[in-house]
Image (cartoon, rainbow over the protein chains, first blue to last red):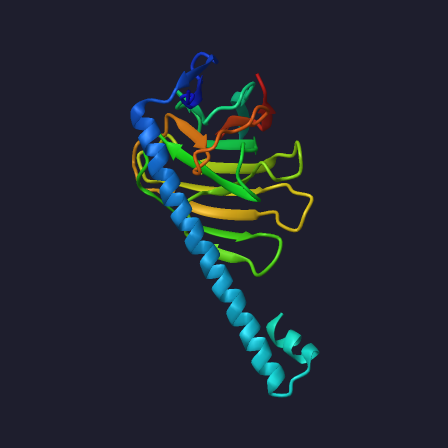
Length: 77
Length: 173
């Protein structure tokens, strides 16, 4: 059996906290959020990978032009 | 200025989210301090913040680093990072949120900073400037993980109010 996720509600007017199961609407919103977050993270990670690949490619081209590794590092650090 | 603890909550058992409701409206600003870890995931994962149960109207700019590579700026979907299941055992991420003029009738800005803790190369740190384009006074705030994973037992969130114009000090009641 799959357990219904719960949330903890802290009522600041009374100081009481209660554990309640998420409503169907909240569970649906949670799934929507999850899909959106996964898409955003995939996009971010892909952009980071592209950036690192471009950096490596640029470094290789600079070295091929005759710059030393120290000179390339000074330019790109 | 006085900083007064409104409520603090430490999870005794895992839960999807922590929500503070009926936030008193007599403060000037709000401060939230968090110590969070999620069940599952890899490396670090996001922290999602919602005001008044609203899922729309949020925009922000996030500057962060991940322990290697160059720092990145983006408008990603979560305000900060929390520890995940593969972070060093029993460690929790630390984060804070500042929300000025939370009870006012203008759009609500917020700023955050935080780090995930990990005894390895990959550990995230971030600073965020954000806006909730909504003029409602903030009466509730919830924190969850956008990957739909639970916050583990021991996760703690404390909510403070800042009151301007009074004598200085921190009040914990």
